Length: 477
Image (cartoon, rainbow, N blue to C red; front, side):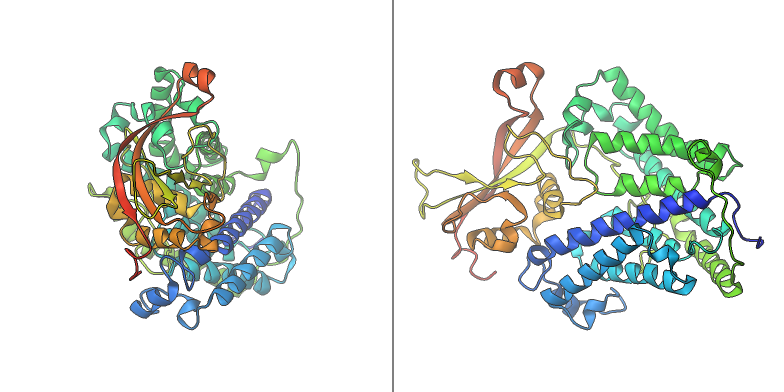
């Protein structure tokens, strides 16, 4: 055995590579199905306009050379195919260099999307997938042993994800320190799931226990990742259980799932001995590959300076990338919690002039709350980007300045690409004459209210988000 080979982590490596491949598959599929309306040639924030303003050096992407809807679709399809082949085990059976090239291609292709994706891709799990994707390049194929240094780098990434999230909460909203944040969060989170209302209805002492358990998992347990087994494995299991709890309670794209995948890398083969005991016969690890792993470790150590400094800072940044490659980032989420759920509801009418008799018809989204009689759906790890940004719009109009008017224009045009992102188009035959947006306060229906009416939500109008506008009003967009 080579001196840097890790003994007893065959299953962990297998689960990590298959898990990351599955998440890459979801990410590329989401890009393929949503890009035309969001960043396509006729999208709300077109990539051609973006790359004219930004240099390759500031936002590396293959789309600086050429972008059309067709080339983006082709790139996303290639990503889907490579991820699918990796998921079913084809990539790991390739020669080492070919295996590394497949993982490198997945990283380059997705980096190219993220770096031109603008606000639609400004989420921490994008950088997290890219950083994990770089490390996956060096996990090796099925012929060589897992590399000890790569496993340590995966643990370091997991540590930053969990510890960063814990610190941002402890330093942020007071409700994290007095253990009351979950009195609100299950109701006000960006994308509630089918069980979120049930979680919200748990007794308040349990909510306080949830928050306390979260603090232990994110602020104490991560340090145990670097102690000998079985301690490190037990710490990873605690993180996995906590993340599965979050999976059940809401929709956070692939944030929870990739954290689970990273934690699986910590589990030694002995944890799976009841069901499987691998007995691999590895080939010698090539010297050049070992040198590349050592070089990568040195790069990670150097680039870790800024994330560590950020973790120690009282002004800790949340989900920040310190380089254009999205490598060795800082993470964290929900440092502050909203107490009231605000939803922006968009509707339209065929009347060109608003009168007391005007009938307005709502647009229904696939993920975010709208119709009070519709139970929230489970969509994670799939990421509905427009729905997420609508949640941010409810927090502040500033989050919507750059794209919401363009969204309305496309509704007034009955743009098919935009309408495919919605669950329901109330104007299938002809575009609306006017579109408006209003702000509503939402809360979960009580048990009595749900039994009486069947409604999952109760809402109250709170004001205007955008007054009625026609296509002529937005002629310049």
